[in-house]
Each structure stands twice: as structure tokens, then as C-alpha cells.
Length: 294
Image: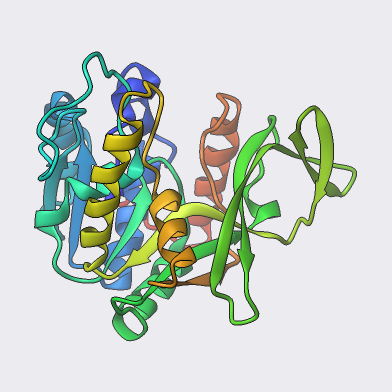
């Protein structure tokens, strides 16, 4: 499952499919290539209906002969059983948890969730496939934990969800840290105007999850409750960590944190693009990816 409904709204067009590879390949294409190589048999894109045509043309049609490609559409008023009417005047999307929910009818097997505009690396897909085949159950799900230093931008601050775990590497919390940056061989985040140190080897969430399909029942229940309680708040969003945290705290599920040493790439700042392009050129030179990709 690839979360891509925010593409047009955040960038004023499909700029997230801007080329970073030697032949103009977008980051999302490398994720799909890695997923196919790792053994995934289906990709479900969560998009908005108004970007369907350009999205299919620029992305979806490129590999439709290599993997089963399906689409689900996230709109503010996408039908959800148990919600008879939506708050008037809402313009902000309902968030990543709601995005998952709109694809409920397309997924009956253990599945992974990623962002469209993040590069996760080949071994991450191998690791999640291993979990989905051998460790996934209604009570046990997973999240890839990236080493903080491998996710920082050279161009400025980033926000990162720092993982807390028990001694068995089960997730206990994801703490959102703002304005994370590296300075003098150390990482810092900002809170209430003060700087706080972070370990460079801390594991952080980059929104790469592995779920059993039974999770949809819990997402649905929590989302209906969320809309009843917070739906009138114009900026409220139902994020994946929100329902995960609730289920962990209630003892209903465990989420295994799978450490990942891959370097994450994304274009947080315009200036990041040149660095990302250079990274993909180097990976092509090393034989990690063919050029052209397809």
C-alpha cells in the first residue's frame, strides 16, 4: 500500500514524481522496483480521484505488466460505514489512518505501508517480506526503524518520530521530535524553544509498516470514534501512529521494530534533490539498480 493522496495538494501538481534517477525515474518507482524484487505481488495506490489520469500516465502504467496494480481513492467524504454525515466545510484530508481505511476492500493478505515520496532501500523490503511471511499475525505487526543519522537532511531541520521500545524490541511509543538537526557530531531537537540532544543511532519511524489485514477492523472502529469526537476540528488528522499507539497501550497488539541500516532519501528541501540524484547515480554505478529502471 502506497500513500500517495497528498501528491497534488502539497506540491501544486505531481512534483513528487519528478525524476531523480538517470532516466528520470521518480523515488516511488524505486520503491516499487524493490517491492517486486522482494516478492510482493500487488501494489495498491491510495490517491485522489482528481489526479488519477496523470498518476496512471506518469507512474502506474509503467509496470502494470510486472505487478498487479490497483487504486483506492481518498477523499474527505469517502464513504465509511458508521458515519452518516461529514463535518461541513472540512478541507483538510483525514490523515494516513483514513487513507489505509479506504483500501480495506482491496487487501485480504498481510501487507506493507509506505509513503510515496520516501526512498527506503532494497533490504527494507526484504526484511518486511520476511516478517509478513513468517511473523505477522492479528496480534503482531511491525515497523521498520531507521537509524536517525541516516535520515537527516544536510539542508535544514526535519521532524522525526523517535521510537521507544521494550527489551524485546516491541514498540512502546513513537515520540514526535521537531526541528531535528545535526550539530557537532550530535543530533538535537527543539521543544519549547530549548535544544535537546538525541542519539544519532536512535531508531526513527519513516512510516514503513507491516500489518495483518485484521487491523482494518480496529482502524475502522477508531476512525468512526475519532470523527465523532474530533471531526469538527478543522485540522485534526487520524494518523497511523495514533491508532497503533491506542492498540499497543490497550494490550491488543505488539509492533516489532525491525532495525534498518539503509539510508533514507527524500526531497524535504529543494536543495535535497541534487544530493538524491547523485545517490541514485551512484547506486546505478554499483549495480543496485539497472538504468533505465524498467
